[in-house]
Image (cartoon, rainbow, N blue to C red):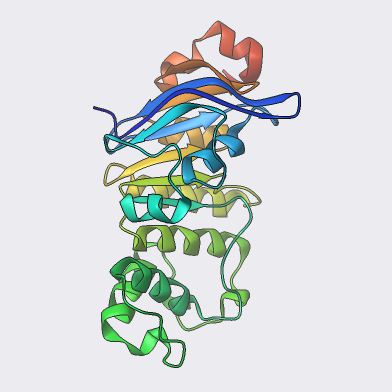
Length: 248
């Protein structure tokens, strides 16, 4: 059984079909990339998966449970975590506190606004371990606003990891990164890969082909092909619709 099973997903905005009979599945521990040109419906797909939007038709099943109409916070409790194209960090808090609050949310403990999360060992210690894991251990006590854009992306990954999710929904983690930062993000995701399932929405084809176990190609809201990186590279329909001869 697939961990995530999407069948016949439809979502329209006026006369625009953002997802059109979209069907795909993500296996346990798989890194499954979704690629496609601008306007293909990738971000709309992730919004429906995370519960920020509901589909007009179709079903979304996660870990054997129908979550099609389940609100976002309940999906999170079931083991789904999302990072966004636009960073959603608390900039006036420390790097450590951002992750400690995510650990606190996972543990289900009440938020102690009068007591910094970093002062609670049960929150601070796992938060520091996660920051070390994503290469931000030395930045733990800095204000989040002082980090570079690439470091913000790494911090978002740490926060997603804090949720101990079975499935991470990553919406263009390479967006806005320079060459060195993108390479570092690829290595970070490579280290996570296999420990939990990842659905990766990404424009960076070098990253996609370096990381993905399988790739689904989305055009006008519809999956035109799913396969291994080698199968996608060799798919004539994909080359014509998206990748181009030079990319393959």
